[in-house]
Image (cartoon, rainbow, N blue to C red; front, top):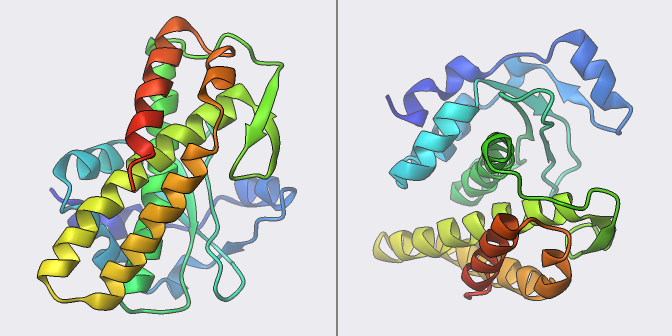
Length: 220
């Protein structure tokens, strides 16, 4: 089954104890009955255009909970302790760009969970106490967090590169332009990572993977 066919089955309200827990991080949950089902299905359908990516999302995401966000901003969240749950906000617009923004949030959190699963098989981080500058948090963050960000955004960069070509053929200028901007922004952020410094906090396997993600993600 496709993600588009199953995504509404994943949608639910966050259990009270989890909603209260993430509230300490300033995240506010939203009633799933308010979900724009058409936008969710559209976002999922565009993820389905990349079958391998869709398969990963379908495997790791079993529960989707909604978050509140300010107009013009997207918020998403996941944690290793809730290995099959993701939290995403709903964009204020219901057009192609809104669906792309929602698709990005779903992919973003799914890839975090996917990498966490992989780390149980192959340890990637050797230094858990040290920190390195993160281009996404504009502050120093643990090696593991920056490595996760590198992986997630390298995946998103490829997704948007592929999507931009699809939307070019379909003559959807707004969606294509959104993809082009995201590709450029992601490449700029990844390019700012000091991959040599990051590698010092990773295992040999982790450093090898991180370097490949870094090369791949810098493509604009």
